[in-house]
Image (cartoon, rainbow, N blue to C red; front, side):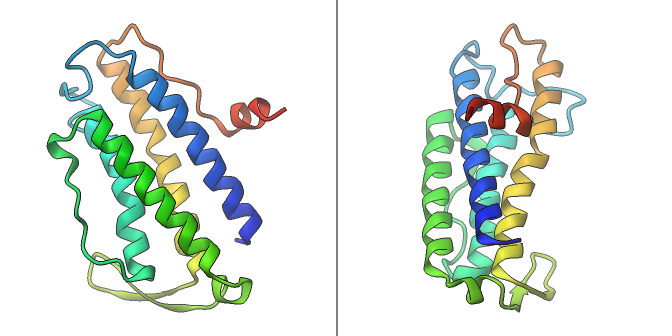
Length: 165
């Protein structure tokens, strides 16, 4: 994946998070942390915290930032949103610190399973963004399981493209 494609996905992910933020702020009191049976996730808080934390986990594998310092288990929306902004700033700084050659150079990357695999920073950064997108489906399921009057925003990439036109 090249720099331009990573930047496009980064912009899309930020756009999607903004749509989610608008929706989350419309939720009735207590909904953000309310359990939803059958979703596979304990709550909206857990999925959104996991998306943000995914940035940190994978960035720390390539930029040596150290162990995670955030636990979303009891966090409110504002704390998760702030954390997301922080890790996205770190993502952008790391991307900008790399030359195109460095972005595409293989390196050893430890995984959480204890393996060390060869990835390029471009592959790791792309994984972070695709990982976030993959969890949008979990959010759709949670919104349905919670039987909300607030609609889950449409986050398909085509809506992002349309929004830029």
